[in-house]
Length: 190
Image (cartoon, rainbow, N blue to C red; front, top):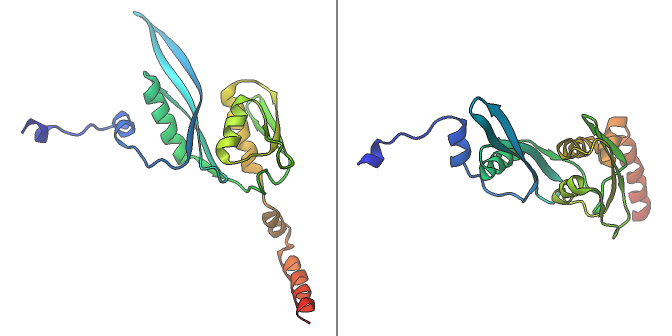
C-alpha cells in the first residue's frame, strides 16, 4: 500500500534516471574529467563526461554531461547526444571532399583518403569519425588540443560536408545532368 502512495520524482534529475532510450548505434566515452568547486566547507567534486554516439552510417552526435557521479554524467551526455545528431554524406568509406571545421581555438582539417588507408587522426577526432562510420580519412588537428573543442570542431567539419548531387542542385545543374543522361540512354537503345 505504501508503494501506491509514493509519488514519482519530478524534474530533470529524475528524467535522466528514468528514461533509457533504445540504443541506436555505438556509444563511446571520449573523455572524463573531475571538476572541483570550492565552497565554505572545502571542495565539492563533480565529473564531466564527453560522449559520442554514432550509427556507423553517416549519423553522429556528441555531447557533454555533468553530474556528481561518473555514470550519471555519462547518462546525461548520451541523452543530449541522441537529441543533437548530425547526418552527413559518405562516399564509399570516406568523406566526399576536403574540409576544415573550427570550434573555439581548435581547428580540424580532414581530407578523403584512398581505400585501405584507415583513420589517420588524433584520439578525440578518431573516435568521432569511427562512430560515424568513416573508415578512410586523413585528419590533422590545428590549434587547441582541448578534447572538447577538438571533438566539436570535428562535428562542425562534418556539418559542412555536401554530396555531389546536393552541390549540383545548389548550382542549378541538376536539370543539365538529367538532360545529358537522356540522350545517352536513347543512343544505347538505338
